[in-house]
Length: 608
Ligand code: G6P
Image 1 (cartoon, rainbow, N blue to C red):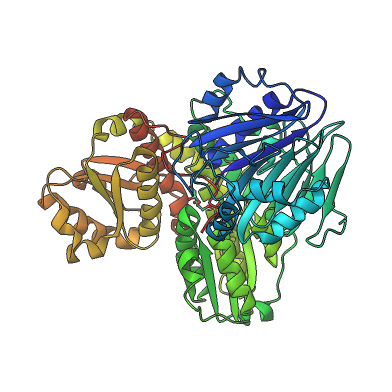
Image 2 (cartoon, rainbow, N blue to C red):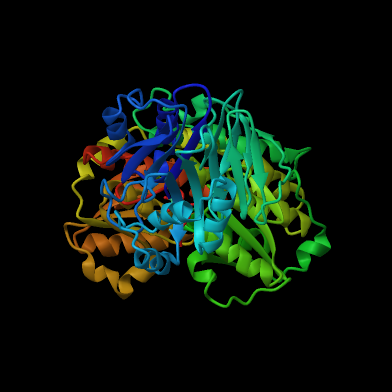
């Protein structure tokens, strides 16, 4: 949700800001804007559309002189994506410019108050109140104006502030949502994500809620809510800028699909020591684990789908009851959770607002929280009692691929670890599970290699009206993710259905125009899914089967087939999703969709 960047230093700010913005576009791409401070004035350019449009308008930023400024890429919440609603927003007399990520919940009251004082608003955004408040409270001291303004705001926000009268100085404030400070040499930065900073510095400070920072080219000062200076530790980003580049692929999504074998290996291998699963910074005794009477997995979007797979696998291996709950529902459900609940929060970004809120709700009720997160230092990682990092590297495409498969890898590791600790899988079974975990990276690679015909199938089926993904058990959980992948990037309606449930209602929608994707990788349920395939075929549907490599029976049932290599069946979601990711990609490509930036979406959803 919205990306912000700030720069103060010795080189022209706008090109640096635009470069940062390009790397944050996954957070929102409705409109973009940049402002720089120059000789006591603020120069601003903003426009509807992508960052590339803003770059054209400013000659790549060269047209805007000045060495200190802010930039923003927007995912609209208040007000349509128009030039006027684009950020930055200026105060009435042009003294302040503000960029904002989040929502100011009391903006209507503040706007009414300011309008009663005669302030004329230019935009429909919640953000504009911030600029006017800053100007109202500024008496020559920027810090106190920022503090007094922040004290008036309710909601979730990260703000970047620049004042025409304070050369080389920037402020940023964090109340919820990611904010990272970058420490350079004679230059300093802030941004919503490290990807916007790594081309210039790898030394970063992760800001906490309630903190604000003052940046000049030479100095960074962090303050707490009361204005007291706070000492912060500096972290070092371990990956290079190449990790956030397309590396020869047409889209980030394809690059990230292809990176999955390595990403899954990076999640699994460091956690297997001496033939056992071991997590760094996380351990538990058998008694502690036995003290939990249930596990609740909470997440949003694809991370929730990974959680549903996790539920099947953990229950099967550990015989502990597991619930997979959408975070946006869990947070308001008055959940039955106490100190005997182990909460597992799953999130690629570590910043998803609903997941954070659900965690807080459950942790207040006494749950111990283990987070499965990709982004190091993110809010969820810091809030949780323990973290398993997925080590997928930066994921830029809005549609997650390696984010999801590495979440699966972490959940599988957890399941095997817990089963071992509880004595539910020992001896040969345990060793077999470890071997199966270690085989996963090459099986994911095989899954890519086996399905070279997926492009041809996608091109054949790309003019689909609406389709169904069906499966049972783990196949059903994988079907949810396969269906989501297709609809989010190709805009084709699809639904995942538990195969046995189809006959109760949805079969009414099946006719000869329908394609049904049937996931058939659970051998014990193969005959059952075959019955469901026959039911839809009898009503004219075409069927695309996803079946284990070498399964010949599927050819007699399905019109076309995608393959998942054989391995431990409990882990099959990871291999069967790969051809479905590719299928979604090629359908979207055949339909000319913007694959990396699907309409209306954002990768990191930091609003409720
Ligand atoms: C957004 C993304 C999804 C993601 C979901 C949860 O909707 O587009 O790909 O699964 O948020 O994100 P998280 O970062 O918490 O995994």
